[in-house]
Length: 265
Image (cartoon, rainbow, N blue to C red; front, side):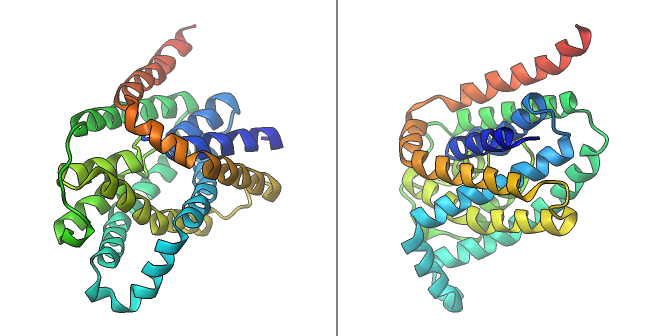
């Protein structure tokens, strides 16, 4: 892996993070099939790249994030803070075992098999996005309850699986729970912050950074931040109009066909 490859992977992460097409899945496909990285290392590198888009979200929502941090000592009095804390707990309950499962199995799986698995999860993401189309209500953060918090956290936990879109799943389940679309998007962004920090720390504690050159990691994160921050507004507007359910399903089938056809050639 060289500097150009690292920057390319950061670009993919920075652009796809704002679209419900699994930025981890897209980054891993690029890292495995275009750059030739082993699945386990591609998974770790894709996680590190989230730091760039996380910084973009923190900078974009810095005022709201600051207010939430100041309210943390008064957890019992604020629904939004309760939502972030509770959903994060449920995310960890699901996400940590899924992370360990993937880390263990990626050591044995070949790159083309991992690509087909990502494709399968992209199809699942597409089906969920399709079912959520037109599903919205009038609920806001002030009406959050424990079930909303648990469902959002659980759906985010399963998004550790590459191909499962974190934003797509969390926004979809909140729409199913009759939240306004803009409110579902805001809530999805906010709960992503502790989840991404946790995923990065978990991978560093588990594997360390010894498998990568620090310059490559920094370059990828920087590219992720730059492309993420500069594209967030336009891509979010685009995402409201585009049929990403069909994209996920189609791209998922392409990834599976790639796995089935390539060995036969």
